[in-house]
Length: 117
Length: 111
Image (tube, rainbow over all chains, first blue to last red; front, side):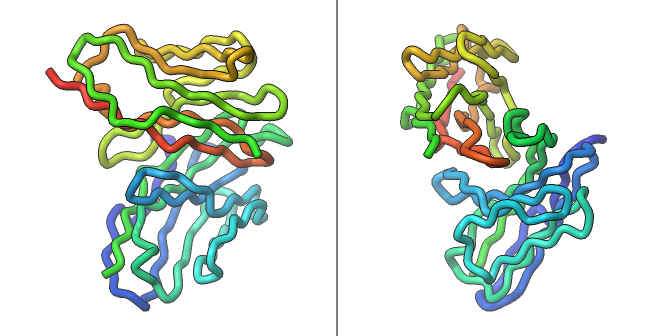
């Protein structure tokens, strides 16, 4: 199936731990994103990568480090987890239409629900 | 910067009722406009989009018309079903390679 897939779907961990979330897309898209959705469903962009190059880094604590080994993968590593990091993290991808790939809209993964205890 | 404003929810309707979820936007130029839907426990799915003024996007019985005069992109459906219960997000490009989402409107449809 063509899709954006994230793993794991659920992640429960203790404060101070380090964890990673993986994302893969087989749509042939050039641009991938990480979004954070809080408990009130508010969505905020964290990072975007275009063909392995970091494009957007939106005032995210440097405990969060994205890594893109190739254009089909975008992983998110989080160091020293805090209670406030609890949220649902969504990976997404979009076609590259030059200046505004977002004009095509995104394809989202199903999300990773991170709970820090 | 470019942004969208959605009506607050939840919107509670009975099955077969008419649905309107309001969305207004602030943007320079005429960007594409999107509606996304998020079913419980799932990621967001593109529901419909419109790429220029006066365009009407439609899908699964939902419609939205891009109105530049009122800077609006309201979502409508003539007869909702229980299965339409979800959170609906209005969105537009907020700059290079970034979509900006509204705060979401939860729809609850009862039998």
